[in-house]
Image (cartoon, rainbow, N blue to C red; front, top):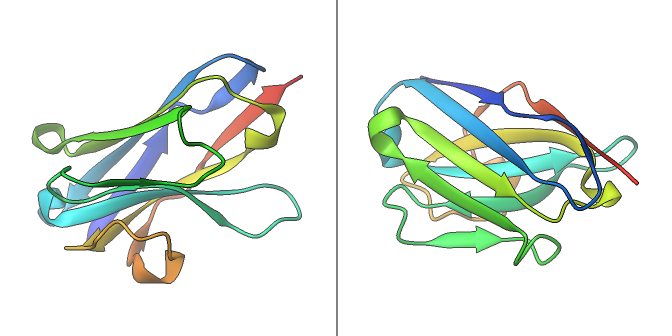
Length: 124
């Protein structure tokens, strides 16, 4: 079992930055790929970014490439999502999810464990 807790969300103006954190407890976190997904009101959940357990590979949605960076610190059992140049369309609840020995895929059903989410609101 892995317990995930997101933090770092908030209200920011367009063009600003936020850094989300996903803290894990439970099973050996370093064996898990971690993904970030988001869900805006009235929309389906969508993939944002993912990182493999070794951090050798990352994957990004086209909509965030060049603006968001995913990283991890396995010693701290934490994965980060640095979000720069935020846009109003980035407004959503952001969730982190863990996939044991995963490849960092953009398919939400592959991820076994999910956090409760953190709200990100970008004002225009």
